[in-house]
Image 1 (tube, one colour):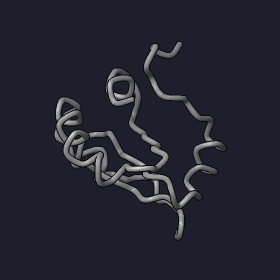
Image 2 (image 1 turned 180 degrees about the horizontal axis):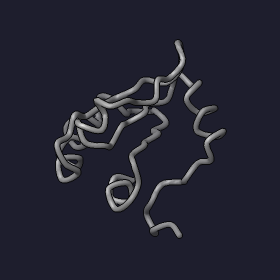
Image 3 (image 1 turned 180 degrees about the vertical axis):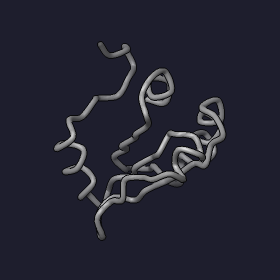
Image 4 (image 1 turned 90 degrees about the vertical axis):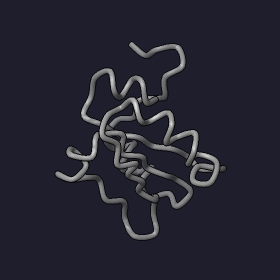
Length: 91
């Protein structure tokens, strides 16, 4: 069940299709340790991957407030994480 203000959840094939779009930004909302282990790599000419390099999810709103105006203007935004409350909070 989605929260009232949560983002749309995509199926894997929808996510991979959206990664092809150059007007898309992908935000890795996992912590820096998890991001260092591996990440989605958008195809050449496709979406732009952004790693906020957060130590914990509490840092995300501050990062978003500072970076969103320049990174996300008129862009479609995809996010990913490992699941749980962190994902729900981020969306």
